Image (cartoon, rainbow, N blue to C red; front, side, top):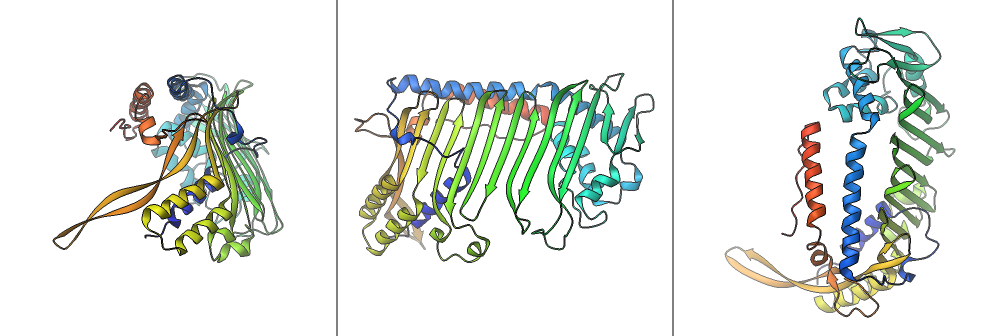
Amino acid sequence: MKPINKFLLVIAVVFTLYSCKKDEQKSPADYPFSKENESVNKTKLEDAGHDMITEMKSMENSEANTVLEAFVNCTNTNDPFGTAMKSTPVFRTISAASNLSVAESSFSYLSKMMKADVSEDPNSFQEVYDEYKGIYTWNIANQVWVKTTSNEFKFLFPSTKTGTSNNASLVITYTGKTGLTPLDNYDGDLPATFNASVFVGTKKVFEIDFKASYNGDGMPTSVNYFIALYPYKYEISWTYSSSAVSLRYHLTNGSKNIIDCYGKAGGNFAKANLENPEDPTDVFYNGNAYFQVFNIKLAGNIDFKNLYAAEQRIEQKDLEELEAYTQLAAEINKYMDLDLVFADTEQKIASVQAYPILRTVEYYDGYEHYTEKEGDIEMKLIFSSTDDSPTTLETYFNVGFQGFINDLNSFIVELNNDYELSLEPVDYGK
């Protein structure tokens, strides 16, 4: 029998990286099944996909994109930092943005300032900020930036490419944390707060915000970072302690949830323990996860330590393939819950369960052709408490979602045309 612990390692990675939001007060496994039939619930799933594409298109056409395009147009026409900065690493980092698409360069120009290589002079984030702060005003007649000495870091420019007044502004603020750092050959400050906000008049249309906390060794214990093209906001938050780590991604339109993904893993994450663990359970004990699009949530939790121990016991029995994977599937279902639910009504659309399968594998040894049976785990959907004919994930999602796929591929075409990308369309039902 081939080793089967690779499957458990995949589960560990998925739950560690993609588990979602604050700890659930109630497990989705305890939710009652929806009273709607499978066809109605599938329509609701596809509707959530349509809504997501609609929001993505709306975000692309937001006012913020127009203003950012105008700002990048000015910086491409005339470098605001002048020739004095051309040999410095921070200039090379920022100026590279001018060769990118407008959408990407907008973010790069603003965010890469705090990510700049500071291995050469100036040799700290604070020094970069202090050296180049000032008020940069776009001279519309001469198409150049004019710098005025100031304790502020601000750009004044037109809000559109053809604008005739500097009615937009970009304001950058920064504070650093001094002390020990985990970076080699660097003893400067670490970013504690960074903010870059774009205004049209007094209306804030775009923002990048970064906040971080550190322990005594300079290791970050919490990080919150977001990019907002108002009213849209994409936020990433991360926490770390020796006993738990968490990660969350969240995209919203005002108070409306679009995508929300949070994960928390419990274990022993002390620095010394991470260096040479003997097996995964020395580090990772358990986790909970969810991924939500609008009102549809895929949520679960795992007792990885006990599941891994059970898998090891199965390995030692030297069982036939089918029997080994039958026992493993039972242990997965015992120690892992995964459910597709409606977030608002707390009703289950389906539960995900592990099932053993045998697949035929063909291979050649020289000129000889061989086949053998190989065990594996397949995830299937249970749609009610009395469901005795579970459906595979592939079967379920291969039918009934063509409208969403058409919308998605149409959006991919628009992105490729607008930003000179080469994204591949999604093949469906093949």
